[in-house]
Image 1: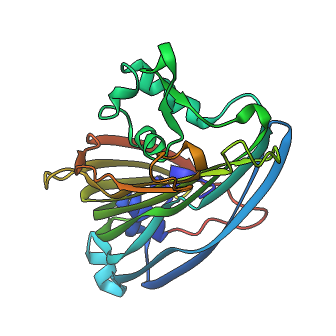
Image 2: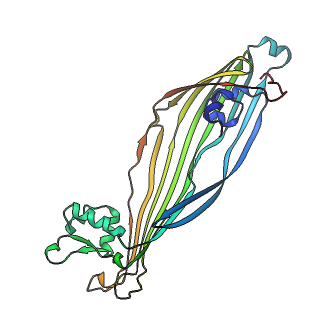
Length: 336
C-alpha cells in the first residue's frame, strides 16, 4: 500500500482493519471486498562476469471480506450519540514471498566442497564426521570429501578438480506469504470519535528451494568428476493470534488523529512457528573417488532434518499518526 500506515488515521478501507481497527467506524454502508493482485518480480545477478536476468509472476488475493453496517437515520440519528456501528470479517494479505533468482559462472579457483572440507578440519579432521553440518556430511557420504594421503591422512580434502574448470550455478526459489484473518467491530460516536477492535489470526507460509550445481567443463574424461548437484529445501509455517484496539479522533473534517494498541494474546504466543521440513539432497558423479570396493560412480544421499517448534512473540506496542486531508481541485471533502 503506497500510503503505508496512514490508513491508521484515514480508515474506511478494509485493509485498515489490520492496522487501526477504528477505521471501521468510518463506514456508512456495508460492502463486500474481493481484491486480486498480480505481482511481478525481476532480479539481475552477475557472477564471475556472467549476468543473468530472471523474472517470476504470481496471482494473489490481496484481501477479501464482508462489512455489515448499521447507520442511524432521521430522529434516531439526532437523538443517539452513536451514529453508526459495523461488524466485519475477512482476510488481508500483508506479505508475498514469491521470488526467484539465478547466478552462474565458470570457476577455476574454488569449489563449494572446499568450504565443507574446511568445516571438517576446523573440528579436528576427517574423523569429525559426526559433528559437521548436514551438507558437509552429505559431501562426505558422496565421496566429494575424503581423507588425504600420507601425513595428511587425518585431514579432510575436497576432491573436486576445479583448477581444470567447473561451471557453478545457484538457483533459489521462494514461495509463500503472510496474511491475517480478521474479525472486527466498531462504531462512530458523535461524528468525532471512531473506535474499533480487531481479533487477528496471522498465518505465515514460507518455502525455499536452493539448488547449487558444479559441473566439469574441462573435457577431461579421466579426472573422475562430472557433476555435483546439491539441493536444500526448507518449509516453514507459523500461526498466531492478536488483539488490536484503536481510536480515530476527527475534530474537523480534514484532520484526523489515530491511535491503536497491539496486544499479543497469551495463547502460547503471538506466533507459533513450526518447520515442516528441512531436506538436503546431494547427487554426485565421482567415479573412482567412490569406495574402491563398490566402484559406484553415482552417489546419492537424502537427509531430512526436522526442527523443533519455536514460539516467537512480538511485544505489545502503541502507535499513533495523523492525517491532513486536502481537497483536490474544486472538489470538497464530504463529512463522514
